[in-house]
Amino acid sequence: MNYFKTLVLLAVLTAILVFIGDYVGGKNGAVFGLIFAGLVNFGAYWFSDKIVLAMYRAKEVSEAQAPEVFSTVRRTATMAGLPVPRVYTIDTETPNAFATGRNPGHAAVAVTTGITRLLTKEELSGVLAHELSHIKNRDVLISTIAATIAGAISYISRIAMWSSMLGARRSDRDEGGGNAIALIFMMVVAPMAAFIIQMAISRSREYAADRGGAEITGNPLYLADALRKLAYYNKRAPMQGANEATAHMFIVNPLSGKSLLKLFSTHPPIEERIARLEAMAGRR
Image (cartoon, rainbow, N blue to C red; front, side, top):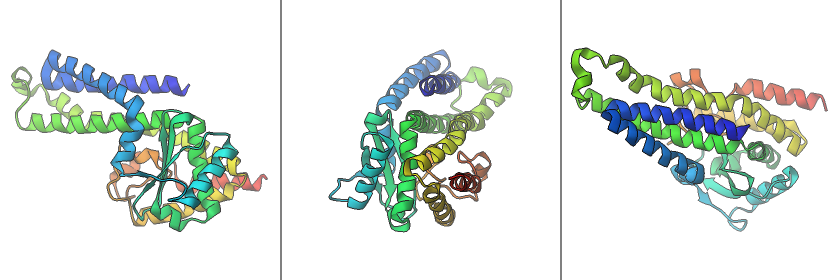
């Protein structure tokens, strides 16, 4: 099912890229948009994990370099029945984590230096189990592809918007202001469409990953306590350099809660996630 969703996602985002190409350059632009979309889709499938990791300057670490994190990842992966993923660290004090990769055999887990200092060993295992649950459910493929292509759409739509504002639109579309609707699409709808698609594929799966992570560790309170800490610190010190295109990949939203984008959050409310985990613990 996730592979089908991935195909649908690629098709929808490709259509947006073709529309943008047509808007900027007519039929030739649409052809260019289609070709570009094909290249982006190919790159997103095979290299999106490397792209996202590079965006956050994540560095791969060995067991000798990060023994506690690596041993926790290996132990949790064993409990989940998964191959041990590659382990990366991101040099920031903002505590957070995400998983990426196209399948369990080509997966990676990235943690910030801040999360390793903040959480206890049990809480960290809860976070890593959540991320490994994403890998086990093959959620990371569609999440990483969405991040890569949505970022491309946002970037290209900005170029098209500035091109329009500076008078670079095709003259046959400028006459009589008939391009106003298309301009609004470029400025608002295209980036928002990509963002809403991200939201749609992320919210329900966060609950599933929470549940799966709790089942892996055997104690839902490990993750519940971790989420409580992560939410507190991320609200007060949002991650520098984080952006909307990749925010859905993190275990908690790395962006400031003051933004209007909170209305379109890719993450379920932390309070609800904690309540569900605590309810699971109460049923034990």
